[in-house]
Length: 396
Figure 1 (cartoon, one colour):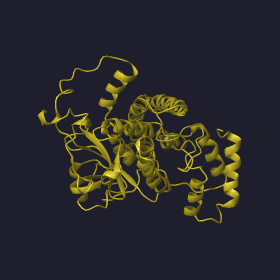
Figure 2 (cartoon, helix red, strand yellow; figure 1 turned 90 degrees about the vertical axis):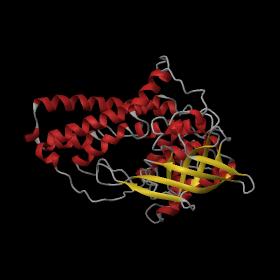
Figure 3 (cartoon, rainbow, N blue to C red; figure 1 turned 180 degrees about the vertical axis):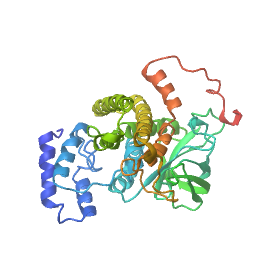
Figure 4 (cartoon, rainbow, N blue to C red; figure 1 turned 180 degrees about the horizontal axis):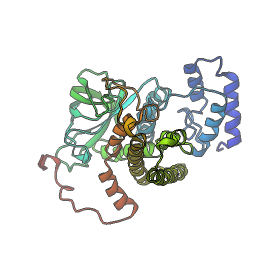
């Protein structure tokens, strides 16, 4: 029988009674929450869920927040939660689900994404990282380079796509793996960004051995698996749940209210327009989440991610203009390798610089415009002459 909202409220209150947040270690509370099926209620029983409607997660979260219960620090483990977990759930074996989902949700194992390469960013299917099967050992030997890898310096595991058959067209000769970031042959190097920090990395893979048991999906079907990851990625980036006047619009609205001497009529008109757009995007995100409750994410997430990138860049630009000379200041150029991206906890200069990456990461805006045009609006696809050509014969 499907759980109801009342069932979940009762179950959550039982959890709180048995493990009072005030006297229970956060890690112990989170383990108990997972085992009670209240981690992600729409997942199957035994995997942190109850097979309940996805929309009922909000019921559980509200009860836990009101009780002051700890969360699993979702910003630190966002790649695992938003990309690795739904992919493993959709394509993984039962053994893989039970091995990886619990420590992933608990934050005991951080994940990163080894997809983009120096020659395969927007055209991801052109990737050149190779995986060759060592049949005697039951392992794949991986060689190649990945780039723009968030959290690689803290990650324990990675979702990885590699080419396993160069004789097939580029979308068909790819296989999906789970890669141990501590395995011999994995080298992580920082990439310093315009902010002065290095939250991104480049990753070199030299003779890295991956057991066939860590393959996700069938050999050669990695592109289909990766599309599930990418759709979830765009939803997780563009469809984050925010309160009214939350996200990037919050600090600029606060500055407007607190600093009347900075106001001009022209800035006021721009702020009003962006505030309305931010609210429309927030409500659209709520509608998207309701649609997700009924099935898998679709290409609509690409539209949300497009909006997210454009609004962040326009709002952060307005904030710098509003602050005038103060907007030119920057708090610290120290080279750091942060665990999270903190837009609202930093200064206006950081927000302005970091937002430039929003139209690149998670799929460039140009590529997402094509996806929206073709898969949402049904417009004719762009002409392509490489669709049926073996990857090994493509010009590089």
